[in-house]
Length: 269
Image (tube, rainbow, N blue to C red; front, side, top):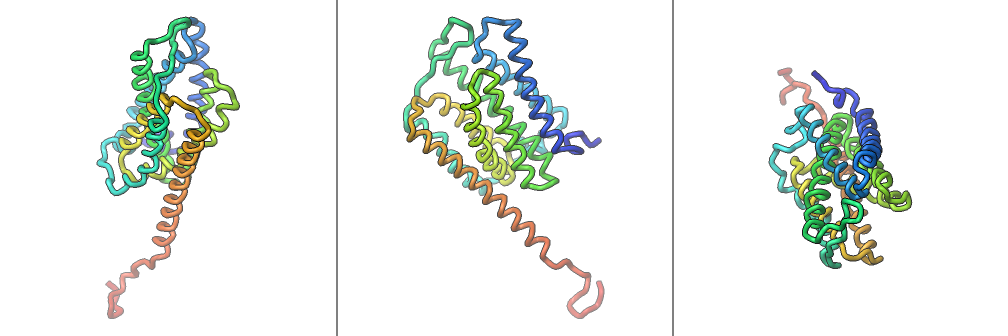
């Protein structure tokens, strides 16, 4: 039986993104009423793993563990495209790392070891699993039969828009807008590479690593921000180039003459 994800991939992509935003609103509203002592950071942590559960449930319901390339071997020749992305992981390391103060309960600050655990397991691991399963997994593979361009660009755009959840959890709109504009080209780069890697695991590992080091960045200096933005734009450019290569390859394939079934001496086979 063909699922709604396959029958209406565009509508599902838009609807699922909207559902995640609604889930964020409901989670904050319910938790603030039931557990009023939770901070917004604490609410975000619960939401993060709730979305992990939703993403795993979605893949399980579809039976797409193989289709989203969780069981396929990595195309090692495509790893080279991840090198610029790997640099992003190490930029915060170069500028220095520090464990930030984190409070999950009002008036209580976590000790450094607990804060580090929350960042690594609670935030980075959860985001890496859910966002890759959803955006470079289910949505990308659902849209791929329509076109690779659509399969990469639409989930990348939804990837950026879905981060409006950060506004719901306390960040300002002014903080979200530039973040969204940078997440979209990053998503384009990740999506284009996902099509070549033939495995989702390298992106999950990368996503986890970049979220860990990014959360531990000790500086937000102008130089640091400009370097980070530069590499994000480079990632987007790589994605656009790969999509252009795909489009050119498709055109060349269509232009190739088809066999007429006539042998070299003009006799029909």
